[in-house]
Length: 185
Image (cartoon, rainbow, N blue to C red):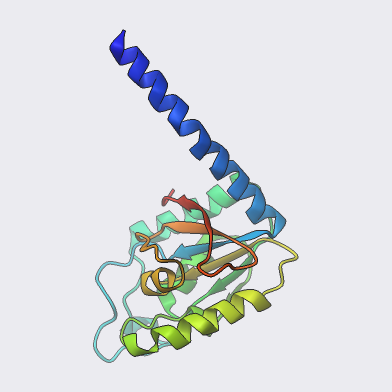
């Protein structure tokens, strides 16, 4: 009997979280929020010495697992009726590949989403640029942005795992209001 009561209490506590998730997805569909996603699994940390943007062979890239995760993100967004999203990514190959593997349409690079991992002194300026870029993005359809852990943490205070996303309320507050944290599907 005690166990049943505990299970019922846990289920009741989960109801607000489910309702919050539902309203966050609705806000994303309506352009009242956007999805900020950390690229999916790319083993390692940072980039190899001497990496070059535009040359994926010199960068840390998605693993097969990361590609599968990105495809699952695409399927999740379709199931959640996030239709014809505007897809923006950093210029790093792992972010671009994450968005392309979703299979949801054209992908556009946005340098404000670029990692500053190797240049931590640029964090403040890069975050200001990201805020400006988010404000300028057309909101006529859902917006999905793929970036890096350091950028997302600098903007929101949340350090997402690979392939984890945050649905963030628009217009951006200071600090931004995270409506939902979405685990890697």
